[in-house]
Amino acid sequence: MKNNTFFIIKTIPVWKAILYALLSLIASTITVAMLLPSIYYYEQQYSALDFIASILFSLMGKSILVLLFVLILCFYLFLFYRMEKKRYISTEFNRMIREVELIANGYFDYKIEERAEAGLDELAAHINNVVIQAQKAIEEERRSEQIKNDLVTNVAHDLRSPLTSIIGYLNLINEDEYRDEVELRGYIQIVYAKVERLHHLINDLFEYTYVQNKETLISDQFINIEEMINQLVVQHRIQMQEAGMQMRTFITTDSPVIVGDGNKIARVFENLIQNAMRYGKEGKYIDLIVSDSRQTVEVEVKNYGKAIPSVDLPYIFERFYRVEKSRSEYTGGSGLGLAIAKSIVKLHGGEIEAKSSMGKTSFVVTLLKKP
Image (cartoon, rainbow, N blue to C red):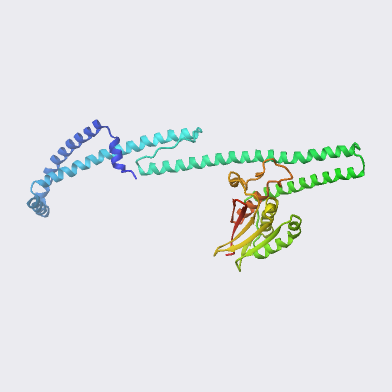
């Protein structure tokens, strides 16, 4: 913290400081010359005052006059300092107004300098904080606009490809360009698969938009994570068999109970399991590991397939982000599953992270226990 008095004194020009010193000396001399007769007069009028004065003179001698002169000199110097301080505050305040006008005109990179005076220094700090918040708001608005543009672009891309195929095959059917009923059924199956993909994509888009809303209502239910995991294992048994994989559970807690929306939490683990099945087929196993601490329940969904490249790992929870860059419908889902999972976990006040190394990828979900 700056020494305000010393800083303000440093701003006074040398010639003005000398002038103030001379004026103070002259004023002090005149004041002492005017005070001494008055003091002598009151000594004569009041015996008590005369007694006090005689004691002081006996103890200090004429040095008391020097002390009186120094005190009066300091008083006048203080008056000049107060005048300079007032002038400094006025000057700095006017300069600060000009700086604020500069910021108001759009120069948000400009920062108001700190001032020596505590009040002005705090004001400058608060204004700079407002500017920083305004910068963050502008960046957030730009980011939101970019996200919206990217969302439109990605949706258009993912909708256009299956729609183009649907229109093409429907044109073939409409123009009777097929050899026999077998080929016709093949065309219809392709159209059905494309329509089903569109249906899943639209549902994912709706759910992603819904869970992005921070005011989304979450029902307060007691959810036993162990029971939920066991149910999900049963529900995915057929899919796991068809994929040639096996799901294993490792539960090391007796009370993994949280409060939240059971359907939404189940969707988180369903998305993680589907992701593990899609990208972890080489490893044959998916492990679901449930543990807890005093305040949280931790669920790890681990597969043993190909590792996620380190350059992709920080972005896999972003909507429409795919490690497989071709955006092929055969090598990935809608690109929204992990984004939906993260949004749901955030709505519940939890955390989700991904870890990947050679031959192993884990998604770790941490949720708060019931209070």
